Image (cartoon, rainbow, N blue to C red; front, side):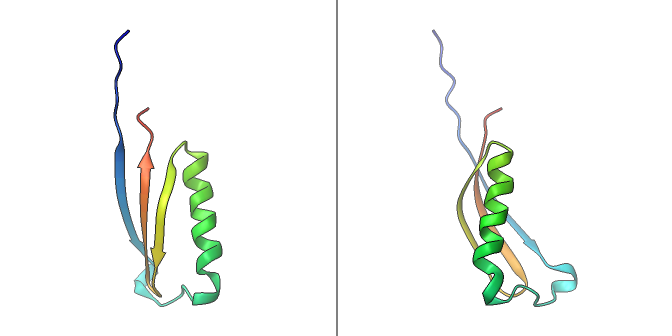
Length: 65
């Protein structure tokens, strides 16, 4: 039986509107967990999340399908 192995890693970066510093330290962990839930709901996996006051980086394993 043939196998197809694939792994797609996506580095997603996005910023706040007008690069305003809205991402305060107090909400970042909760925001990362929320974004991880969204990725998981789409059958992906969040490997790493990081952010500063005006933008977020996500490293996502995108499903093959």
